[in-house]
Structure formats: structure tokens, C-alpha cells
Length: 467
Image (cartoon, rainbow, N blue to C red; front, side):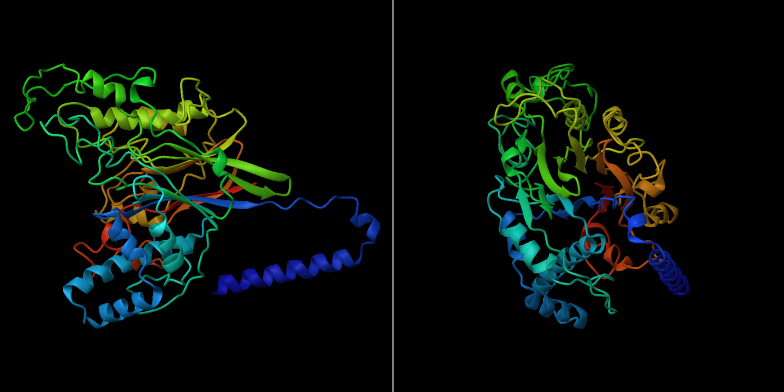
């Protein structure tokens, strides 16, 4: 507290001195220097919220629980008087409240929300509306929904929201997993038990230029230069026998399925936002995606190849590649003078993990990227992740301070273009000695008391740009 008071005293003293100096100047000298234009500081955040419920309707129902109804459930939770059924609902409320508290703590102006289920097409806004109204617009406890102590946070409003259609749970007409039947989740264009699971959305305090949003949900994997139909490379594995009628070295997808297979496991979206600044309006392109994790491969390196290609897409896009076409049939990538932030859970760590690391490294080192925010002084970090490794709760990592997930990898990214002046960044992950620890860990909740039980198995990652 002493340090805080000293800071206030210093500020007050500095203000008094400058007032005295100004009083001694005449008006003419004051006008020699034009006033500095005000800067606009914009915080961009990405957060995989882990709202992947077993149906979209389930998420809608949870999001429509009003604040007074939530209070009744929470009181019952504290008192230990809930039935098993009520406890299940209360624990979902705890998770959503904690996620909302994390957002209210970091106060991003722009938020990419991963794993926010929708109706598959992104048309039904009930869940996103409920989240904004019943959770974000209500003061949350910054110490955690399950904390006896209270530190109520300021509500946060986002005037603009977008929901995007997704390939997850969108059933194809092909036996993509080669198990002899066509069914979810294995034969969807993107893994999902129903259309809309694992989708993503966007919240913004700045207008989203909806007329100029480009989506790439239907861009075909085969149309990316250098990409080939995955082949069977794991040939003598007792656990994973080769399907009948196929042999080592065969192409995994039939020619018909490969011709139709989309690149994006969910969607790739370019959503421009319009930010008013002292020098007029500034457009920043939010490049949103959530590539498949490069794991769960059996006979082929399908997921590893797809994860690499989904990330490489953005490198090519910001490089202006002409092979790219969007869902409206418009060709080409981003113009060379456009500002952008690549945002999302990219399921790739540049130094560690199971995937091919070249594509995430290429993107983070791209000559159009501000590398201060990917590898330099503004690479987002936290004390909580370092402690997680030290305690043995997270697997070790080349840069333990930069981990963004409970599984010990830096997979959540906000990668800005090099014309954006980044002034700050962070990962919200309080260590045991920091405030808000119960937002991350409380063994009284769910099975494990951490990860998705209490908030998410991912962390909110943010960067701040001065425009």
C-alpha cells in the first residue's frame, strides 16, 4: 500500500510543478507546440472458454439463467443444500461466472471466444445474448464465484457480437473415418457430436464491418499448394489395424471425399473492426480460427497435417496469396497495407508439442508480424504458468512463463501485424500468491477442481495496441 501512496504523492507533486510552470508561461509560448493527438489503446484478447456442452440447447439454457436465479443456486452451493441435479447446474453457473469474471478483470475491447457452441450456422444468438446479459453485464466476484470474500468487478458491455458457422459436427456424405458407417462425430467435416459444437464467436466494443467479413469455411484443403491426401503411414500397429480393402501407403480419403474436404475444421474468418482514432478511422482485420489439435492420429498424420495447413493458411493470407478464395468466391488474400491480429486457440506451440512446428513458427516470425508480441518483450506471459510447471501440475515447456493451457503448451495466440504498436500484453493466470486464484483452482468444484470444472483449461491471452 505504501508504494501505491508514494506513487500518488509523486503524481500529485508532478502535477503541482507542471501547473506552476504553466502559470509562469504566457499564452504565446504555450502555442508553439501543437497538442499531441490522443492515442486510442485497444486490448485484443483471445480465450477458449470451454463452453463445449453436449448440445447447443444446454448452453442456451445455462446462459438464460438470470442473475437472481444464479444467486439462489449459489446460496444453495455455499450451504450444501442442492440436489444432485441442482448441483450440476450450479457448477455450470460457477464456470460461466468465473469466465465472465476473468473477462471483467482483463477488460478487452475485442474478444475472440473459442468453444462457444452455436446452432451450426451462427444464426441463433440466444446463447451469446444470454452470456452478455446475464453474466458479462452483471458484476462478478473477481476473487472467484466460490470465494467467501467478495471483490465485485465492473460489468463489461460489448455493443457488437458475431457468431460464425462451423464445420464441426457438419455431417459429410462420406465415411471419413473409414469405420464402415457414416455418422457423427467421425464423419463430420470437423470433429463434433452435433453441428455447432466447438464453434467460435466474437465480441467487440468497436463496430464490426459486417459487410466486409470474409469466411473461408468451404475453402478446399486440396486447393492449398503443396497439400496432399493423407496416406497410411502407420502400417504394423496391432492397436490400429488398417481398414479392410486398404493397404500401407494408400490415400486415406476417397478421391470424391478429398475433392470435397474443407481445409477449416471450424471456419477461418476475416472480421474487420472499425476503431475511431485521433487520425480518423482505423480498420483492423481480426483473423479468427480454431485449428484441429494435432493429436488423435492413428494410421495417418491427418490431424498433424491439417493443423499445419490451417495455420499456414494465415501466413499465406497475410502475404496476399492469390490461390485463396472465400465463401463468396472472391479471390486473394489480405492487402499488404492492412492491419491485422491473428486470434484464437491455434492448437500449436512454436517450441513444444506433437504437431509440426514449422507452420506456427512461420506465422509468428512472418515479416508482416510484430515479433515483439510473439517472441520479444511483449510475448504474453504469467506467473501462474511458471508456478504450474514448478509444482509439477503442468508439463515442462521451453518457456514456462508463456504457457496458456493446463496441458503445458502455448497454444492460444494474439499475433499482431507489424504496423501495430504493441505496448503491453499478458496471460490471465494468477499464481497461488496472487488474487483470483479460485477462478482457476477450487477442489470443491467438479471432478478435478481445475481446468473446465472451474473456468477453462485455457487462459485468456491479451495484447494492447496503441493506435
